[in-house]
Image 1 (cartoon, rainbow, N blue to C red):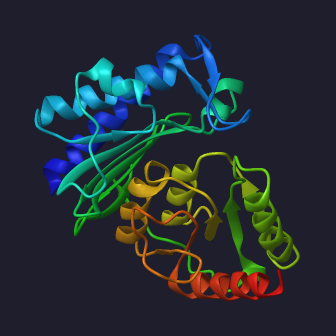
Image 2 (cartoon, rainbow, N blue to C red; image 1 turned 90 degrees about the horizontal axis):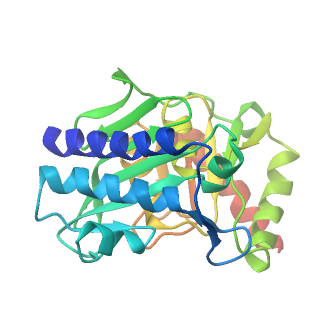
Length: 270
């Protein structure tokens, strides 16, 4: 498993070097699902760098990348989430922040085996921090062990969240939860990178996290980091995370249970 961890870290750093080299030189900026869902030439270049790094370690690797242009440029075919082993990659998680020069964006790289994250790295490129984990080996931040906070109640907690690209029904659901949370919680932060948010909970800088309408590449590396750190991540009903999960709640076991309870109460009222 340590070989997979080394591959994940090396690939995430390879993508991070592209982000550093191309800062301020974005090239073309395009929209995808909506006017606020953007992709740049740097996303593509970073994706190619990540894939090539993985292929250098394992020429037969299967990969899934957020930006489909990466497949042709890397000379690989798209993998599937139900492959026996597949690497799931987000070349820039936090593209909007990167475009604006806001210091919160990351490269997320995870290896899934039979749908279960077994190794992953989230390179916080804006802070030059490596968050990583592998099954059974624990989670580390720049080599130091990571552990979640012990905060057990919402009024004591600093939470992190994000807002969906879908500004219709999904945003309405998120705002209903946000409104309930903000009336009780110690504080809420929104940074724009789900992958970083998950690592913030894993290392105790934040106490809990929830977000809706995410993709596997947003979360896969963060999931293994959270689990190995000792935190919990599920869907809004409390079911274990799978690659099909889109709405998530994370925190230490006690706070996670409190967040689930509040979210369930909110859903029952809307």
